[in-house]
Image (cartoon, rainbow, N blue to C red; front, side):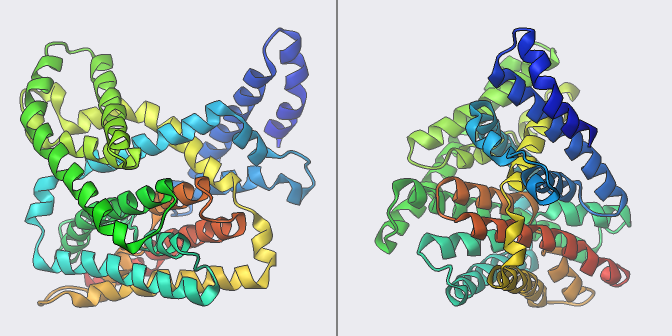
Length: 416
């Protein structure tokens, strides 16, 4: 509460010192966002829930202060600030870059038949059921239904992996299926985002154009990876001439932005380029010295990405309108889509063949949506595909799936 009081009292003092109104508003917003997100994230982690949930809940609190009688339109402040808008877009690029950096194309080639079956079912079933559910709920305006399905198809395996690792089960048969399926799931999800984003940007939704967009996305993936594998070792060798950490941070940052822009010039969403940029930095490119290991590069980027991604998650929460919980129709939408989210992923585990697997546990491990689902929601809302009430409902669905997934998985860990 003291932060809110400060937000109300500090502007006059700062303006008197000569600071601009824009600087003051943005600085106070950042103080509020980062402090509340850190506190909320820590509290949720201590309760056994992902930090991500706490950060979004901090945003929901800031965006709905009127509910507790405080007349402060925080979501309007975010929309009007060019810095906040750019920070959120930059956070998306870095988030997808980190997803690509944490992925491994060799792992993709090594995954077995079971992981492939789980991944494919974990995309096809949620998209199909999401389209059907959208039609039943009246969210069927072309792209809306597809984005709902895509949101339900996303999987945040990091949440599941953390739970499995804490119980010493990361090397179990069932865990390896979940982690292998997640690698394929990431690539399929990003390809789906590439297609839907291109359609959204062009403003046209014609099934005849889908094959062209899919072909363009696949060609970009293949071309960028082929060229990158040829050029990246030489580029890394040149960067390796210096051991300054700032050089590596700048190199990774510029690579993410550069490939993102190439994707934009190719008519694809910049997010796709950021993901591919992460994939380019495969382990094979970092065998020339200890300072060039992949995990070190992630650690160098983290201080920047953590702040920006926190701003992004709080911003996502701030745009949620809690009034949707008072609308019986929207409340039914949240409950129905949450059930679809659980069932569509949960069923995928039953496609696993062989002995020694916990099929139900594998399905539960695929339930959390997390970051990638929120990327779909943010993109769709920014491009006017989702109305505010639909966006609010879907963010709450992602939050529920992120909390319920680990809760359902915990009782099954004894079967792993």
